[in-house]
Length: 586
Image 1: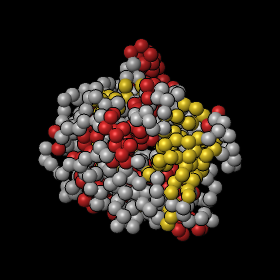
Image 2: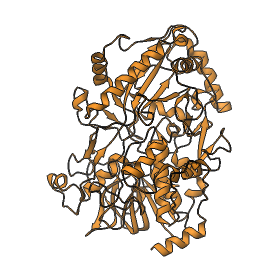
Image 3: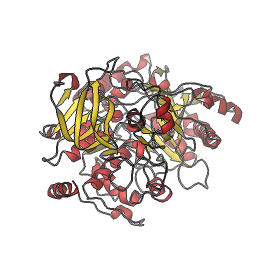
Image 4: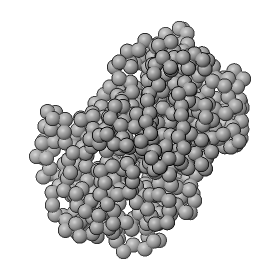
């Protein structure tokens, strides 16, 4: 089980081999893997509560967790964005065991082969190419439908579910995309990502399969060498010279830094807080750009210029449309839906099926905004309801929402400090559209939405875009983007990995993501990605953790770029081998 920090005797010494800060997607994987060795003690520290609540466990909790929750969501906000009419943008992040995998839409996407090969080639991160990572994706996965496939696994901890319900409006959208040249696909993670189809979800029927459920099972939680400490906010890494010795934490929710508890690490402190929290904690601990630290009166322990820099995120734009003919969907707000609501509630309770079990009918689409580019650069999330503001506002009646994001933005932002007070949120500046090259693909995505809605299958349903004129000029569409662009929740790259020769690299790609120039300190989460991947970042973050763990125990391998890459096999290291390698490594 887990223990809230307030229930721990502050006078007792808290000493572990490994201290993991952040119980999110990477942290849960690391806690599982490291605690496999009974001779190693592991503490997993999470700012939020445990995930054993219906808001997390039921997939429909997504509709509360992202727009409204304060208990399970950090609810960060960006700085005013110059290119978005100086609007501050909402930046939800999970604050609960499982992290953002406990509040997200559960969409299982890996990205393109191109993405990971780019990590290896352009960022000089040898061993992080697609052929080396594909076996790790497969080892995690337990796909419910695609069996004995070179791109998929069926024996891992992470349950991946195929959509069963196929609502009429979604089927009509698929036909519309087909009419505009996109093929139908049932697998965005196979040989070719291009196409339109239903997303796969990280779910078991009626249950969110977040990383807490997947990797912190009752059997794992019962390990005597793993302690899960919740409601524990880390305030700094305890440093002696340039060696991490532990972590200072305080009970979450306090207005002052008091009642602190020190956790000492005999081996490593591992930061798994994500692209906002990990660089924030490093800087609070005196590790980061010298100018940023000195500005806030923080003693410089190690001048590491890349900390907090290189922030990348997928800017997202939602296009709402209404239709007048055909069936409504249960998620739509309408008086006439009462019988649908009762039916789907019955199906949830007695059959673990239907929309309230997580079978939302969400569609995806991936395509190129220009034919000459190396891979898809636009992703769509299509939902059979009208919504805005991250789901905080729902439209009445029959309708659907088309959310589009540019997958390879050239804009770069940063994470910094608002103050030296560790209880203050980090300064977050995504710098959306800071690079002018990001405008054209997003405008192209809006025109693609117009094309889809004007296709025969959607016109037969009386579909019409409601948020801008269909004959809008590029100038008008650009203004729409300025007013309405938000995030689709994929921040990365603020502690980017790379060799020491890269002055902006924060962690070493070759040794389990150790922080350059600091002993016994690692960062293992989405912040280490050199470039944002072409899709949702949850599954790749789990693989980042697995890769780092394999490097730590000497069980890593890399594969050259092989055309037959899907057929590479991967065997999990045997436990005895793990124990032997850990003993030899330390």
